Length: 343
Image (cartoon, rainbow, N blue to C red; front, side, top):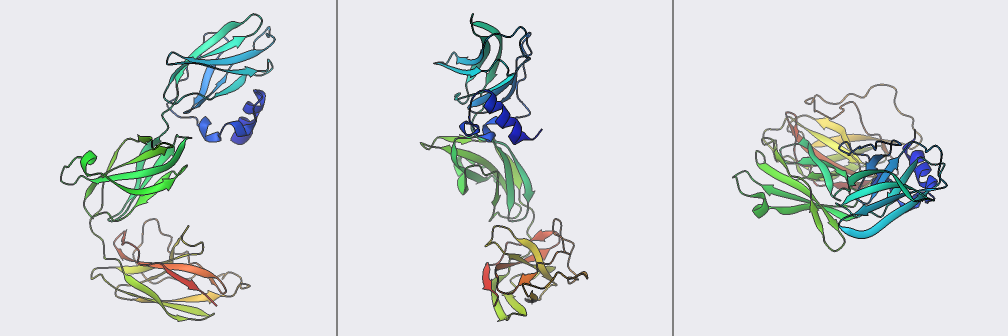
């Protein structure tokens, strides 16, 4: 079943607008408690930081109405959601994070607790933090966004190569907005070991750190090229040139972005070692894509890079370019980003 349709159906069944609860707050996690009551199959389907979704077998004979009620020994507040008798599911919202709750299915006239389950709401933080890629100077962190109250995520890092404590040597290396699920750390020292974690920042600067991950940057790759610039520019071709700062590269790859750096075509051109320029063809806006394969120069087979894909530059468009040196399977840090408007 389509998830958005299912969530809307649940919310409408309890008399709520879909806007009253975010889809993220209904994330089903793999470690959910799924205790079932001995009667009516009353069960917890999902739990988040401030909500829980429940379902049950329709009662027969059916009472006039039902309600789902959440109570906690740590809070005097009782939270209730009235449910039409025809429904067999409900979402109860407004729960407190990191709190133990007893959730009851209650009938009216007379008021009788039909079934109950116990649960604990989630801590609003980045969950399941993991390292998805490591280079000699960069590392990518991914995580699951289990919070619906954060205003930003801060990425913390500590160089623990010498065995120093991460709590003493940690620094903020980056900040990403709410709902982010990844970050790429740059400027790592080749061969060094790092401890990293993600901190959810709520209003009032409440910090909720994730678990820590440990990674080791790969051995040194070639130095990054510098001073990327335009040598010649026309509506037919563009020539880019850079300075080679490495003495051990296997080649260079040129990347292009057509959306101001949001996404990059990882290889618009590739050249061999000691070559410091690239000539790129420009196509008219009306020109159709070529049918023949375009051959790139002979460079190492880069993991994760499709060497057959060449960005087709269009006249009248603006692009960002950058170049990186290649050593084995390693890319250097990128050069400066160069903005070019093609006539």
